[in-house]
Length: 99
Image (cartoon, rainbow, N blue to C red; front, side, top):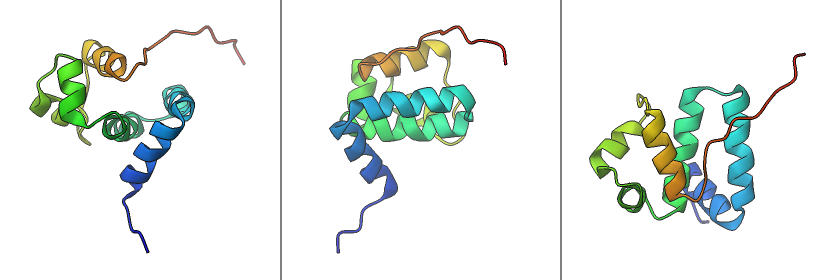
């Protein structure tokens, strides 16, 4: 039996289906919590080569990126945009209709 962590399984899923990653992030941004977003970003970082690779591509310090994506992390917009850009993603604003 092959035991692997949930993070490893999600990273594999993101590599195999990048559109799933986009849908998940949008869902979290729509009605999730910051903690959920940080978990997904950690999993995505793993899928895209790990924190050291993402940090280098985003021109961020790896130690700071580990802290930013930690459970208690609080990424600045500039850092979040750089992290997503390193993964081939970006933040976007979308108009919503009132309920």
